[in-house]
Image 1 (cartoon, one colour):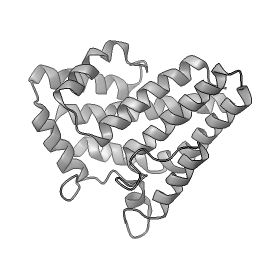
Image 2: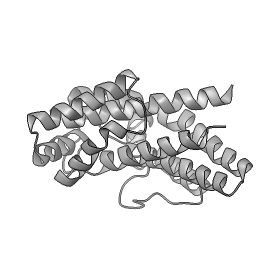
Image 3: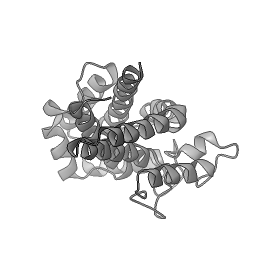
Image 4: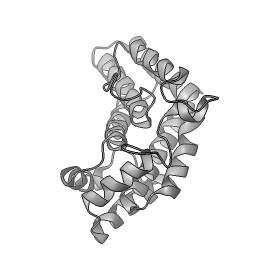
Length: 213
């Protein structure tokens, strides 16, 4: 079973990264994230996380504007036009490459297993990379709540759901998509976001694999 501190760290990391993947960063968001880099919940020992932190610091040092970052985010993920790299699982996994395909509904069902619904239900396909990260964050929070209530078996169930979701969904498509997105970005901020997301997924996967042994 993952420790309380591990679950807390992953909940914080996935929640932050999920939000940044969905919504382009504002000046306030950038300031908040940079202020927290020294206290980032996941250690910077992994190559992706270290590269992500460096890219974010470089973004600030170079004075990348929120409007430049917004434009990069928009063009990368196709918020207002065609995407360079689609951020939806179904596009990468379905035979026809469609949004709102079978994978989207499968992710929606996984949220139901947690007793929740996707936070952007009917506004954003449930299999957006940001929502899949949010799913892991919510699973970790649910496990934390169970541990606080001395319900260890319930906590284990939530971790098991998150582990199955990681295996059946996130790992099947997200790492490859994130690497393509990193190569297609034009700002250090978005490059850092893709690296940080890869780092969090890498650390999470290592943790749940160790827990399963």
